[in-house]
Image 1 (cartoon, rainbow, N blue to C red):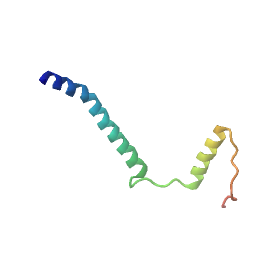
Image 2 (tube, rainbow, N blue to C red):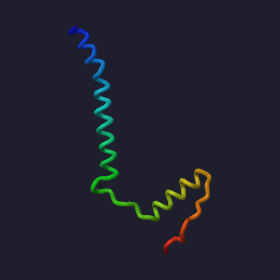
Image 3 (cartoon, rainbow, N blue to C red):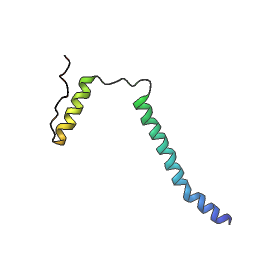
Image 4 (cartoon, rainbow, N blue to C red):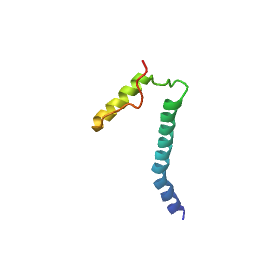
Length: 69
């Protein structure tokens, strides 16, 4: 029984390490996105990113209201 227990623990070690790395990486990404130093993008940059994504998809963007000057 002791040998089977050791094999089980040896087999679970990579799974546990992978889970710890995944949780740490997810926490780092969330902290980077929503942490104290995350400044909101200005609307001009956000519009340029949106326009680029729409253009790349082959669609045409039609604004719902006139752009604020």
